[in-house]
Length: 318
Image 1 (cartoon, one colour):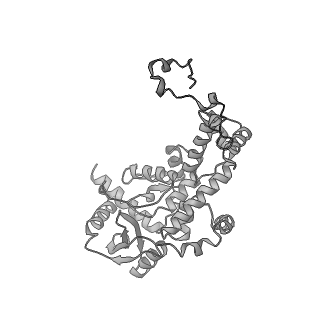
Image 2 (cartoon, helix red, strand yellow; image 1 turned 90 degrees about the horizontal axis):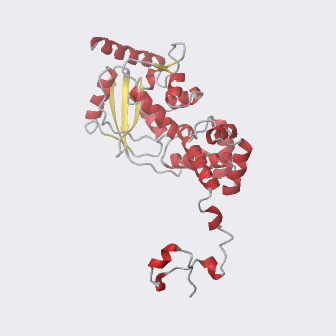
Image 3 (cartoon, rainbow, N blue to C red; image 1 turned 120 degrees about the vertical axis):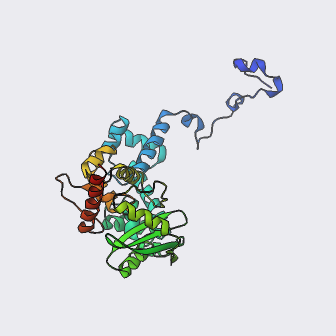
């Protein structure tokens, strides 16, 4: 057996345990996986980083110019490198990630609308245009095969009208408001069409009390468990909303700057609109730049009432 004498560590090893590199025996590296080309390849590491960046910003516009700026490369060079390593463009990779997230959301029993926004699609027309051929069917038909976890819910009076709280075994998955129980039950069915829904007032009594106190401006129980699906961007926005003091407001642009995306005001608005747990994630504290109320999923009057209750409570505790 021939031994590589230039290896300094070989002098301290018994002769029988010295490993000879295959190349020194005349073997060549695999031409398919190219281990020597990829091992320690800085281009490969860059592409991995680009993939992680794309995965964390699916609900924002991801252009080559933006990627180039983020990784200090020309857009052309970045795309050429990315495609050389993965065989697809960054845009195709982002589309693939969105599709996988959409399928996961639909299989969880979420509505097409919620699954669409959670996966980063900006409109229903783009969703059907891009995914019908990839799924082999429309998103709605794909969703029909989904099986969701059991969902318990409770109905209650609140300062904002009738309130529904729903939860899986992992935590609260929906908080909704309406004028009647019929509207609330219909809304829950729309959000979780394939869930096994069961009313359970007693088991959810403590959570109901926590939320009612929060509406009146008191501190929400920080241990309140939530079971909600979100993109990385949505989670950053929602976490920031929870840090806003009770009774205070922020504009969409202020939130965008706070989460590190100063040009993403529209994406912030979409994240607020897709919030499934009203009050627990206080999207009612976000207003337009000029101070106007802006939109609110449960109605502007409820948004005004929530802010007024919080502001009155804040004045009392000053």
